[in-house]
Length: 323
Image 1: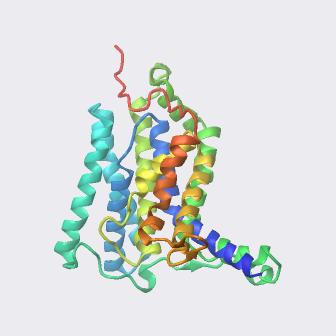
Image 2: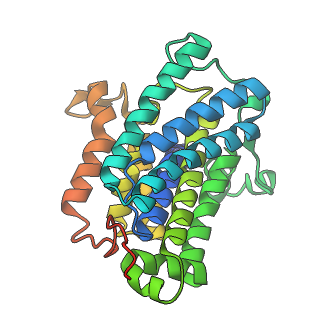
Image 3: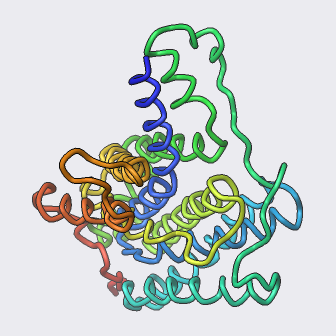
């Protein structure tokens, strides 16, 4: 029974730690499926985390914070879209600029408004997302294995966790089974054919960029208003880049991207659990080595296990309308 409890706790941590990665991975998938490379996922999540924490603190409402986080992230996405789609600029440079802008702007504004070194004041009560207990928890709790797993790992998460998982399902369904999804994927493969059919290439790419911003907003808000109790400078800690790695690892497909994010979350959860633990024959592993484990495994997985990643054919290429 103790083993089941330990497993349930690790799975619970895995899900909680995977949510920002999952949101950013789905965001990158939408954008890159439409042919717009977006390495600014990190910056959009960071600006969303800051905006959501500020508004949640001022209003005392976590949901108001979520709206603010999504709005801030979508605004940066539109900047990226304007540079990459309308002006056909270099998409990598635009993404880097967004990351640098978010990193600097959040610290400057946070310090100017609150005088706490870029941090926001701690969030309390309704300013944070509370845990949601799913139905039948008490009924299933007595069932061996299934009960503890449902009680600890599945139930008891905040609303953004369930929204993130819902977004995976919607992403998979929309991209594969709707006209909008088919057209959006076609834009990433052959924009000229879409244009010839009388569909706006720029309109579809802007739609993908906006969806990307909304998903980054959800991930950033979760970091600041649910997982933490406020904003901290650089709190995304490379999660946007790991999410991009997950998208490549999954070959730009939603369900494999979900499993890749859960894998990275599991590595992070194990790393946290191993801190201060003496391993047989090794002794106590330095904290820094444990914290680096998820990042090292990310590189190892990308280098040796995904084979040949094939991105959308028009990915990163600005479309020039033929006359």
